[in-house]
Every structure is written in C-alpha cells, then in structure tokens.
Image 1 (spheres, rainbow, N blue to C red):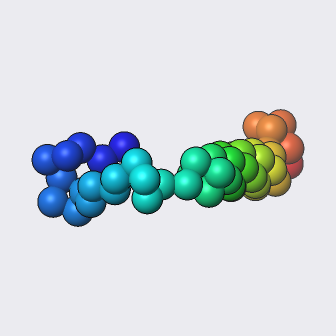
Image 2: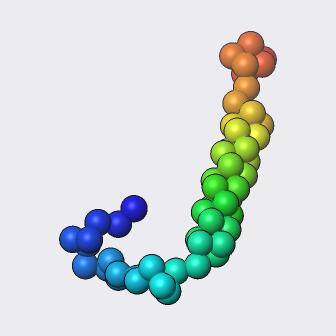
Image 3: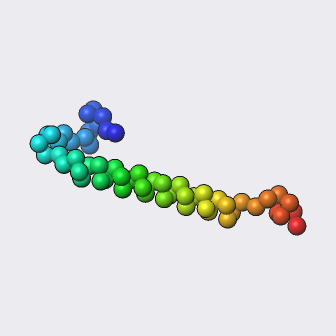
Length: 56
C-alpha cells in the first residue's frame, strides 16, 4: 500500500472508484501470488534431491 507521502501516489476520489474492479484486481493478484508459490514449490521438489540419491 502506498503512503500519501510517496511521490507516485495519486489520490482518487471515492466517486471515481469502482469497488467491483478493485476487488477483482485484488483477487487476480492474490491468485497470481498463489500460483507462483505453487510453481516455486514444484520447482523446488524437482531440483532438490535426497542426500542418499546425490551420493550415488
């Protein structure tokens, strides 16, 4: 969340906000974060080997 002291912050009046769009964007971002976490876990499982396998 941006601070109002951040130079890139732009105030948006409540009349100009669309809560449907805002919550849809938040859901998309959350879904993308969850997908990245699952992908990272899957990659780690592929890249990590047990020590006994590695010594062979």
